[in-house]
Image (cartoon, rainbow, N blue to C red):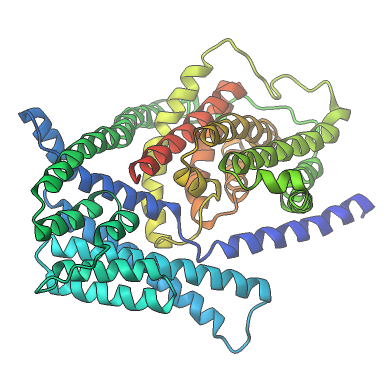
Length: 508
């Protein structure tokens, strides 16, 4: 065995250990999908306040919100609360085991427990309002009593005060705290804030304030209707188009078999001049080692310098650091790739092919539509498997909460331009064709997609990203143009980012 292989084996063990740690740490982390569903539920509730000016708008509103939107919202909030409570119990159990975990793990579990406790309290505040809107006042008072107790125990004084204000608004006789209005505006949002303020103004007999609130609710409802129509309408239309594309592909395969587009036998093969050791080297050194060891250590040291320390204080600065980190990862990975295959230059025809001509836009757009129903279906299954756990890409929650325009532009550059270029060159341009030396095309597409998914280091994203990766791989294998898969990848990330921005902005 050569020294190079020994080093690669050691580095592989180290990389697998690091990846395992990251994947395990995501085990009890909440998925962003749960928050997105709540945000969309909040939009639906805001739309319920829309006073339709014509029959068509009334029909569209009923179609969007359903027959019992408040009851459906209560179910959604209760589901998320139950999942959060399960995760909190597991985290607390791990902290109280006979053999305590490592200090770093104790710190992580403690932070997770604190975040979950706060989340549960916030959910209880909202659940109580949903209950009173359905006439369940006694249940709401009990819910707020639990929220107040939990908030007091966790030193969440603002949330405890909010629970007391809500209790006072709906108890008999009412007990209005002096600063009830400011507390509600500070700690509640959207539809929930409006319901609490409506009750407060009615008790205070303030008709002018009620009128202003009703006008504001109408404006908010109109905006929510447009936002909801955008984030649900486009995916629905895309899924219909995608389902048609998938039916065509399956039908063609049933009729033509080996000559069909889905048939691996009809996909031209690549001539791969290097062996598996080169593939191994690029992945371990160029991606995992650079991304999991070199960059984290380097940025940890650099963050201690005044320049980066100051940069990390602003929203724009944090976004710039994320972009800089990704560009550095891409440069390192592509650098290792180049030095690993440069002895094989010039490469055989078909490698890393990029051409502005041809039908690559149709392949990219068609692949995007075809991916929509597939990934949505697998995501629904995935939700049942993980029950709101499994973590998410750390950039997504930041983008969801971001309000700074410059920071959002930087996130867009990272997600819609930098990521598609680097990841498509590495996983589709290099890895997929390299694997065809040892397995059929569809086997190479599947394995490269699985590695692509695992590289994102979130358990809950492995299945959806594997499916997306297979569509990306098929599009590249068929189009033989990296621009096609880059376009698909960019459209996917752009759609995700726009949905996050719309949902995040709707929360005020």
